[in-house]
Length: 123
Image 1: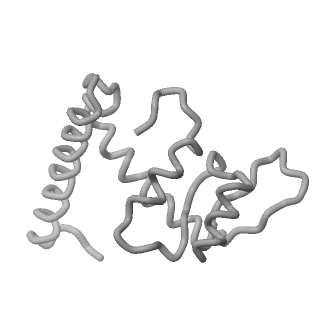
Image 2: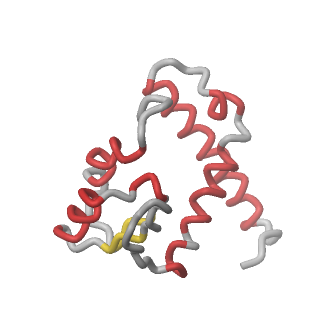
Image 3: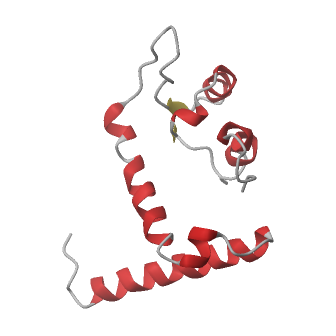
């Protein structure tokens, strides 16, 4: 979590250190378009699926089909913000806010699992 107005790329170091295994690709928005981040990803042999900012002189290509998968993450976050405590971030402490995110995620997952088990959700 970053401060409300902090640039996204400031969270990159913490983000890339999270997974237990290295990802094959990093799907991120234009906020992560920086030469330093792209160089670090290349060094780690991670594909950068990040569209270039509009003010770049040299256009950078990215896998558009893979980038579209990022929409699934955005939709899931949209579902979580239905919970008012998450959308407005009432909690001042990061741990309390993270606890609310965990509860909302579990609630969302249970709703999905119950629909799937009852046969109402089609694949």
